[in-house]
Image (tube, rainbow, N blue to C red; front, side, top):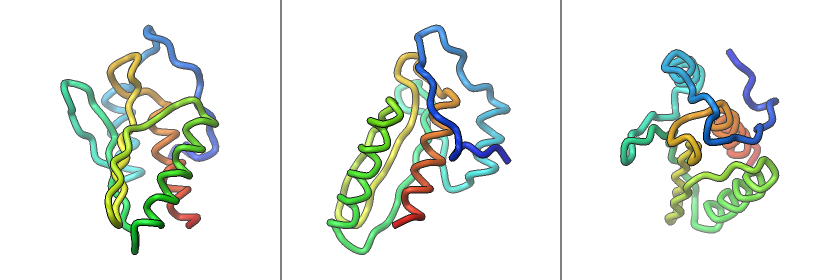
Length: 114
């Protein structure tokens, strides 16, 4: 199992290599709660987190925002009462990059620390 939580995102350019199908499958095997979604022909890693109330969901959203700023990689976030849906993908390459695996794992780590 790859330890993505300990890695740091790298700057990504438009010519950066996309994650291979094998890398995606390995990630999903190691992190089975994440789903691969195809949105507008762009593969994305998506997961929903549940909370007891709205304020906990907001707190989690803010923690993700702080992490995203620190790492320089930003997700799509949908905030609802008691629920936060997070989607990671790399806009510049219109696909998945190792940064998305790193940030997905770190998002889980944030949730587990709450």
